[in-house]
Length: 97
Image (cartoon, rainbow, N blue to C red; front, side, top):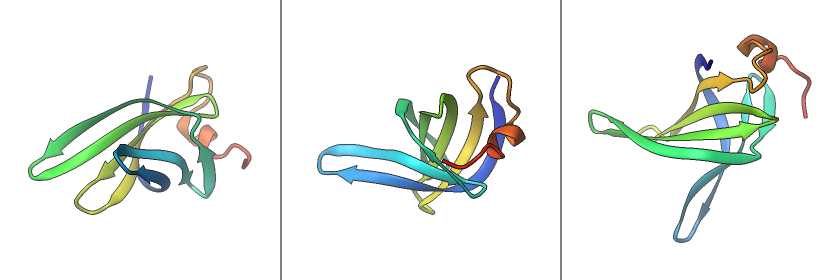
């Protein structure tokens, strides 16, 4: 089951001509997570603000990253360990890559 995080993060993103933006890694609580795969992306709106959501797999776990197109800020909305054994806090405190 996903754990809600809702913390601002730094995301390294690739933009290409005619291709959608693609997050490639993100920094959460001082640790960089390399994104192995974007499994799904979708958009939502809150008033006039558009948000782009990315479900990504990094180090075998699932994360939901959200890009706010108004503020140009990123947020880690949720984390779900695939094996279900790590808490959100334990995941954030694993060794650096």
